[in-house]
Image 1 (cartoon, rainbow, N blue to C red):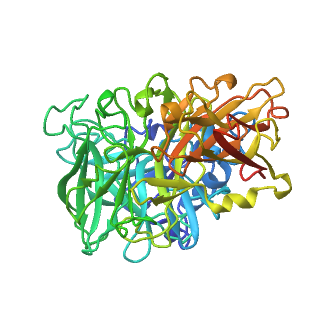
Image 2: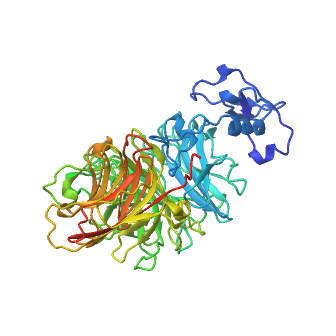
Image 3: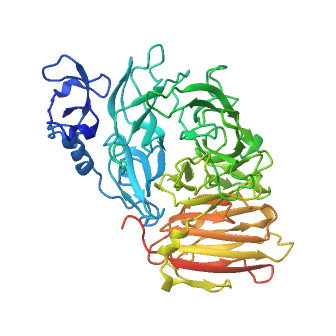
Length: 597
């Protein structure tokens, strides 16, 4: 059951394999390090554990790894509701969802990893060719016994990144999710930042840990890293997410909010790497709900990108993603902040963009609670509502997604009590006003069943694209005084008349997904943008009860509803578009399944 692991996996394939078997009492719950003595040697060597399902594989590391990857896989999972067919539901979700996501486009393959392979003890690994259909792969970084001075950990790799080093090799970086002994003079929870570099181009075999630097904090927090990037000065940079009270109150709630600590090095890893702490470069407690809510703890699973298409500043504008948790906002869902920064310098927020520089990637956690108010003032965050979390970006041929212009494709974790899935991919760009623009990838069109195309311009016609569909509603507001008129697209229409509304509340300055008739709780809402617009485009993917919709390429809402039946709840129609005050057009396609086929 316990397998000797002192060499890189690629080396084992070239050497005779020595099975080192220890009694099960030698290890108990990851609390003590395993020690193996190589035959004929007194040198101590750390061991890995071959999992329960592979306990008979004692022939060596290669045999154990092969068994784990091929035989310890969970059964395929279709997802919630009628079964997700457009959203990807990794098999490892059978073990309770995931914690974090990592992503990288590398040598023509787009990789997404999930921190959910708890049975295997590591990252789940998937790939996609078109950012719509995914398939599971093998070989994410795995749980191993680690020693670094006095530090010891036997834990699953935690939140991290995958970057490409100076030699073009992909390296996964992270901290261990837990440890039972920290580095010398530090707390037990102070795990160092490490990298493990890939030994193959498919990113399925990973080398031994290289430790970059230690981090010490007053309490055990993730201090999640961004993906390191190389700046125009030739240096590598990364930031770690913390709270801002490490040198003040040493407790939470932390009134100052979250903080980012920057480090730099001439090399990402290896003997020439020397990571130096620059210090705090960004501190904020702000949320999109302004004075009604604030961030009172560390930032989480941060992502940092630049070089976006459409940037009026020639690619120098940068976007910081953070998952916000605190009093009254935002349930851990992903916000973004528009900033600039010179190499090694503090982040400068562009306060004229969005809402004092802030925006939400997805507004699905916000509910409309006061129809007497306008815009954000009408909203409150419901931490238990469906969430778009842990946003990660890939898609560029150049792995430097901060300082080098290129394609930016975002994915995230959709989480609620009834759904835990990978989001639909969203192409990112910037408007001239530095709004983060989002759209579904053009490759989604390849899943349209062209013969199913239907459209209507009146509110009487019901079309039936099925509950697996793509709908596009386009509206023009002709009147300057709509009063309380609401308009949009009704979807998942059932024979009994129940349906969900995806639409616009002009009097409130809001867009909405109202699934109250289909067990979705209070209507979800987000701001109608650009403010004062007379044109509204609704683009939605309907996935058997899961809705992802983007309004005017700016405001996105994710929601899950429960239609009565798959067979009778596939109708769609326009509502509120009377042809006079509001002119509308609806186009719909039935979609071919992309995932869980």
